[in-house]
Image (cartoon, rainbow, N blue to C red; front, top):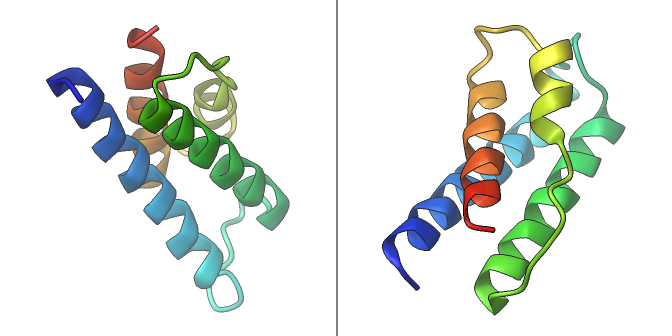
Length: 93
């Protein structure tokens, strides 16, 4: 795996881990700008991007960054991780 692919993999894993942490903490601290269903959809999309990256397959970009930049607070760190990960994946195409 080349350096850009490795960096993208790390970014995807960080975003996926952040989503999983938000899902685990949902009952104690739900996020008021998203839903559990949306988080599950994001996790699935990021997982599919990771699989495609590992297999060297092409995959459509799901556009998660558009959703989070429009709907999530600018200061949310998970928002930034999702945007960075997806844009890095898009650059590999």
